[in-house]
Length: 352
Ligand code: P6P
Image (cartoon, rainbow, N blue to C red; front, side, top):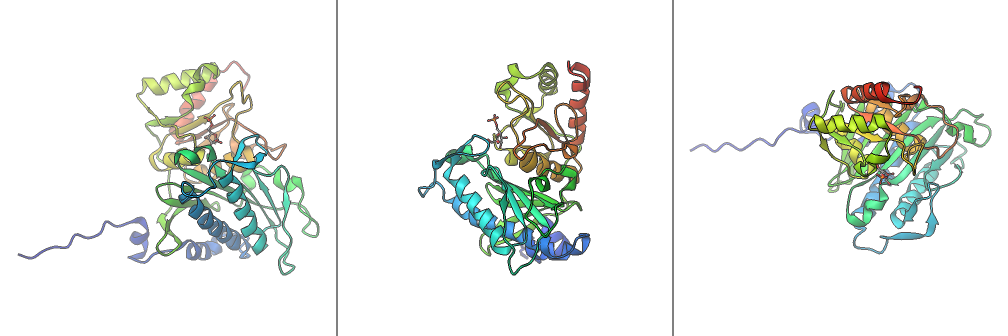
């Protein structure tokens, strides 16, 4: 009897390219023509971040085996969070990779109070600055929950003849030229946008390459899940409590990982909404505008989603006043963010 061999399920990458793998490097280079500042610098920057991600991934994957678990002896970071040793390691690797290539002129990190100047390499003057949270959700490392790197890239505003200035970093999210994240989870995936849609690349450890796995990601219009720390419910403003009650009345599932990159990635794929409203401990919100909310808002908006503060201001339009500024956030499927907006308009005691 003739045996039929079962065809391997097509992946997104193979759909567009037959069985050919498309690596991150190839994709970035091919996409360079889409980018108005196609000077190769941005290509270099994205590749630097990809290299740092592979190095960080290696350590994250064996964190349980070597002595880099637990709180670093370097104390707290700019956010006042206890620095986990992997935080420090991830921060050092990202800075090192970016300094070695000289494709950017300055860096800002959640782990550093001030901006870090990057010396020109081969006297090449770079026009880019990079901001990142090197290992978001790091308090989950000890319990083996996924963590992530979040990054944002801007063009500097200051004169290229001199050092970068703090004003270079205080630009609204609409000025980001690229943004994305790396999720170190059951697999390691790098998702980024340069303003021309969103693409995801899964690390194939057997060849050490990020390979195109999620081409032109689009967030579902609606979703069945909401992500919020329900433990703070009684401390939320009325409009947030009413919206959360509505989610429960509509039988939405509550999915909250406590690692923003993980929650946002799930929402990007399955649909849903992520909320971090103001609380007594964080009246302005907990999450950082420049290197958490803005980059993730650019990715989600580029995928067709929406991202507002819980006072209904578009995250990407916010005018930053300081490097480690916090903000509230409601981000995800457009229909769900619109629903939240209606509750805020109806129940908010504050003038909007
Ligand atoms: P909470 C992790 O510390 C983080 O910065 C985000 O990744 C996460 O979404 C949030 O804080 C969790 O905060 O107050 O719910 O523990």
